[in-house]
Amino acid sequence: MTRWPLDRRRLRALRHVFRLFAPHLRPHRARMLAAWLCMVGATAMYLAQPWPIKLIFDHVLMPVDDAGWLAGRSAGEITTGAALALLVIALLRGLFGYGQTYLTASVGQRVIASVRTRLFRHIQRLSHSFHDEHHSGDLLLRLTGDIQLLRDLLVNALLLLTERSLVMVAMAAVMLWMDWRLALVALTVLPLLAVLSFRVSGRIRGVARKQRRRESRTANILSEALSATAIIQAHVRESWEEQRFARQHRSSLRAGLRATRLEANLNRLVEVVLATGTAGVLWYGVRRVQGGFLTPGDLLVFTAYLTTFYKPVRKLATLTSRLAKASACGERLIAILETEPEIRDAPDARPAPPFQGEIAFRDVTFAYRSGAPVLRGVDLRIAPGETVALVGPSGAGKSTLAHLLLRFYDPQAGAVCIDGQDIRRYTLASLRAQIAIVLQAPGLFAISVRDNIAYGRLEASDADIERAARLACAHDFIQALPNGYDTVLAEGGSSLSAGQRQRIAIARAIVRDAPIVILDEPMTGLDGASQAAVELALTRLTRGRTCLLITHDLAAAARADRILQVADGRVIPMTAPAPCPRPAPHLQLLEGGPPS
Image (tube, rainbow, N blue to C red; front, side, top):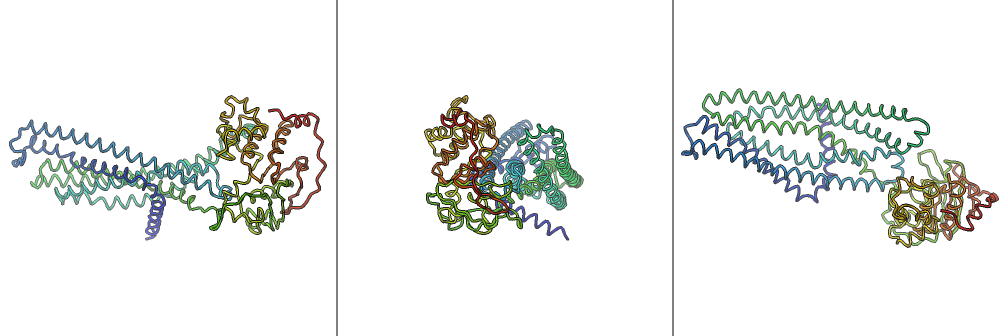
């Protein structure tokens, strides 16, 4: 009795998956219809296949008294005609099967691309709080493996279910027409198969869900290890990471083997049930022939139909396990797609006008986690064109102020304003388009230098890109690269030095031409010569713009118009220290232009 509510929930989950993803099939209705017509043709050939053999059996090998429409035909003519008919049926069946397979695969690939694009688009727009809680390895697995399995549910399962059902119905009808008593013997096994498949598929689905969760953890370990190769090697922790990966992989393997055992048991039970049905048909069929109700050829056709009839039954039973796995993956994708961005445009949001650059934090309180505020009642005004440095210990909330300005998060209390207006009144795209950022990690992509700079403003011309590179003191070293501006960088820009990467990031900010600039530890980790070049580039970037400089370097902060200390969730003024004297070589570099 307790099984039915669970089964209803499972069916509701399947319907939910279909309802959410079925729209991706609608643009491919013509191809789906063509695949369905090919399926009908292939089914017709299945039905026709045994009849030429019946003609040979009943009219050549064991002739019956009533020759019917073949009266007067010789044995050779009947044999030749039957052989040609078998050849034509085989050719048509192969043609229809090819069309069905190709069209189904074509639709499946297109649906996968559409669903993956939709999921990627949605993930890109989810708030930072979502990405704080989800590992990139898990998201990658959902974008790749889960979607691939979902294709089984959306396309393959749909067509296969239709095809198998059509074959079964057509053959059951013909068998009932030939001898309804014998057909009933063949059909008695179907209710038992349905119960077996439904019960086992529920268990497979639960195991598949657990397996995907463990595979996500394995993917997370892989992602972390690949992105931290230098740290692992520097600490000689290759063996430790291998053991960690092996432990997690064994856990995933156990779940996979359990699913395999369940599938194997289902297949074993299906074979036993179908063998019982076949034995019953043969036992009763022989007696029907002996009683004169059927000819030997009729029994031959009937058993051929029975074999073909049980084949889709067998595959339908196997298909239930695939559907169970695919539905588990579909639920994982739905969990992402049904996640609403916490930060999104308000219903009455409007495009932001060109900013003058005044920034104000008005009684702002913010916490990443409930009960642990990072900022408490912060009041801060930055005038247009002013550079303000934020200093303080790690975790004090310096970068949080920048994140609030970009609306990566919204404050729990208070407001962040630009030019006197709450930034929540503006669309996210128009707000962020007027803010340029330079981070400690430049965030370069494995694309050309030109495209990395143009990332700040995609419509930038080649002249704009070169001008930005010159202002960022990057033009000379870019020209020295193998293909100049068209040189494709390694992942993360690792083929360049730290100073070169930072100057390309500054060029990207310059080409954006935004009235507000955020600099988050842009000088960390640079040597003396690189610092001089980057500082000159930053001076050019921030000239005439409102700048929020986040730094631990008091010498760098001293060049700001104002220094504020962030501590204990508060922002308080700080007396500016005297600028540190620079060595003569650095002064010469700044006066004469930095080296590339």
